Length: 147
Length: 147
DNA sequence: TTACTACCTAAACTTAACTTTAGGTCAAGT
DNA sequence: ACTTGACCTAAAGTTAAGTTTAGGTAGTAA
Image (cartoon, rainbow over all chains, first blue to last red):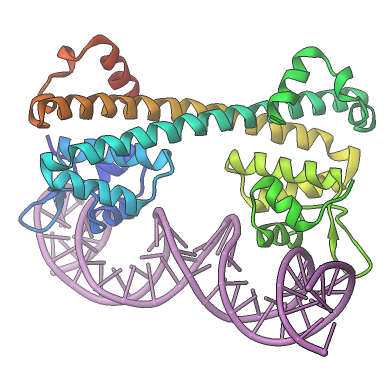
């Protein structure tokens, strides 16, 4: 199975120029072309793009993804390096999830706060509720957001 | 209680120039100065910075945070707008967490993959295991990453 | 008095990750 | 024959979010 750049762009919701940019950066190993120079993406290339998207979500930089791809091209002698990279990224993403859960707690607190302000037609009342007088479930959000 | 810019920078692990940049952008309302022009951050300003950091983690842009802060300055008549903004951000962050959980599944799969490759001293064996022959717990990672 | 540290401003610079532009090829349809 | 649409390249441009630079003030410590 092989795909054109336009098909792949739609598949991943990336722009065509982004895919060309990844290719130019050397992120997509063994990307073949037809006789007139048009890129033909195979399933392996698709998996690479899925991986790139994954590593981008983990906030890895292109230059580091590039380095990883280079290790792949060096074969079995870099297995250990690559494993360590993924172990680091695992930590990374786990931390990021924890951070986002704190962020969500802050946002949940604010949602409650503005719900209350909307009921009261003013912010003044809810603003002055001391922390220990907050409803128990809301106090949990507040404390998580400030931890 | 009031704090210098250096103290606040340490408190949030931000650079001093970042805090000045936020101030210049108008993100910190009612930030006072002493007689020689030195910024004095009060508890309210500190809460604002905590909020900015939270909204940044939700991937909100400075210009949108600025808009929100502007709404705050307009008082009670913008309560509804502000509430809607937090409701959108809640969706946003929840999606982000779901995405990161998918990312984590991919990374967990890769960790297993390279663990196996390390045992085998080669990638060749693990690379050729068909999806339906993967250990059940690993198949879960694989499927989640490809969902 | 001089040195040090922490603060200040305005403006120029940086960086990553694309995106846009300008100009071109190629196959298919009318 | 010609137009359309999808592809191509190299190179310049964009954008956000800071960071750095250059030059200055103010309080303290030896």
